[in-house]
Length: 415
Image (cartoon, rainbow, N blue to C red; front, top):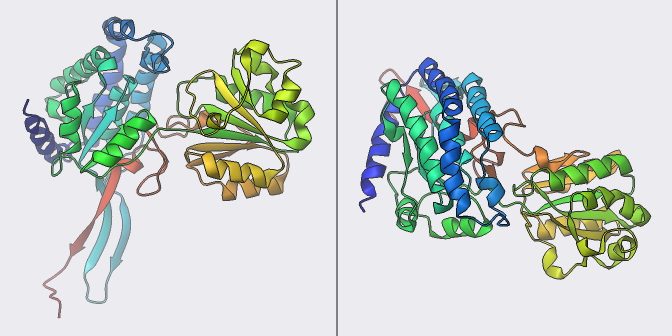
């Protein structure tokens, strides 16, 4: 198949999209939110076809699964994005030089944004809304696991675009076959930036093989440190929520670090997890105090490989540390730089943790489950960037822009 035709059309569409008015952009997104709700039954029917091909115990199953509630949430995100201010055309810098040259730095779209993702059909709508709002064309390569779901959502989007006379090429969903991934990785000159969303193996593959600039997102090896001064009730609620709210997402908790001076509180601190059917992999000290109370079928002695693992399931590593310093060292060794948290009532320890931990999002006395574009007030997100160049953390509208220098003169020449 000649994939070049997709990329050429996307590039052409990006030149026209920049001139679309804000009013039209917002109207399209608002109408799309209504259209998604109106097509809920059809989307769920196609999603059921995808679900039938995936074992329910697969960690990706929950991400793949849509429901009327989840489609409603996607529709609400679209409305939220429509209501946000556009980040385009912002004057970031404005000055006149001694030679009377007037120079402005103005925010502009990235151009054509490629996204490679796995079993996450919500990404199809989320990426479109954020790209469309920021004048970017989206080229999507979803996984075969979600092919029917992605096609159904894309059909609804194209239907709304058609009503407004807007080219369907502002959103391209490439075929689910592997060859399309290779073509996208090599679409230099057509696609301006590539964003992988999925497993660490997918992210590594894209980073190592892409000829297009890559923004890494996704993989989260997430820790919460329960300090010597940590409040037990806060700790119980935060740890339970961070682990069980939705286990298949990248901000889900993977490892609890507990100050050794609170060892006797470990059974109470982790007791709610037993009700959530969470399987623990506990180090020697925590295992010794848990074995008398935590269900035996859910309690295991930790091995070295359990630390630094993104579980994406009802599994959690537990480790006792001497103090904050050891907790910080452990996080530095094993973190994927996604989200890290401390539970503490010690202002100095909180300040040190927030200052020294190298992660896109750091928390004090709150669940890491909040690392999400919508929760951060961004409307929706295109992913959670774990790198430092261009964007970091939840990527919303601002992160989908670049800038250009606009220079106006009156005949000046350089000597």
